[in-house]
Length: 56
Image (cartoon, rainbow, N blue to C red; front, side):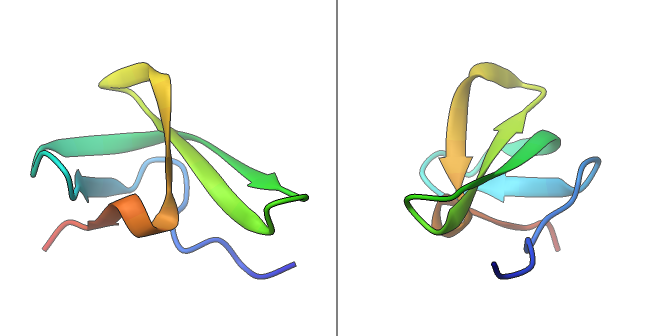
């Protein structure tokens, strides 16, 4: 299992919308071999690492 790129509390940018968000939950999806993230601003949606980026 690889290490998560983001941790809870990190401020990120959602690539599709360009909007700022804060990581609320991080979970490793074993069968997909990658992490999913839930952000405070959109609690009913999850994002994968390639859909978000660090806030600069």
